[in-house]
Image 1: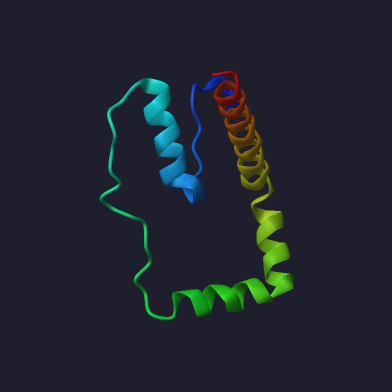
Image 2: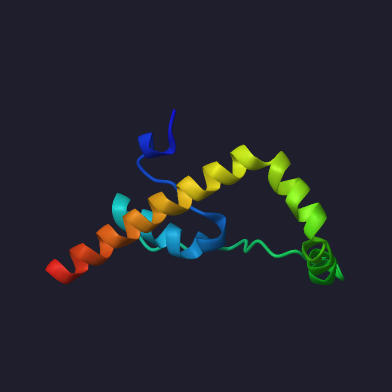
Length: 93
């Protein structure tokens, strides 16, 4: 299956916004995110910044995860198309 075969594809980085869109699309009542995804590991952000600063490692990871990155980029494009459609509907109403 392709991502475009699905009625809705959300992106974790936009969880709250995408959840709101899905709620609207499905006619759900207002929902609350009770379990925000937060890393509580001390030093996590510093560790991530160190990893991301290593261009060689990042290139190797990107190469190993090429198919996953392509899937993610497709999901981002689908999300943008959905958001553009939502904006068009808002302007029309």
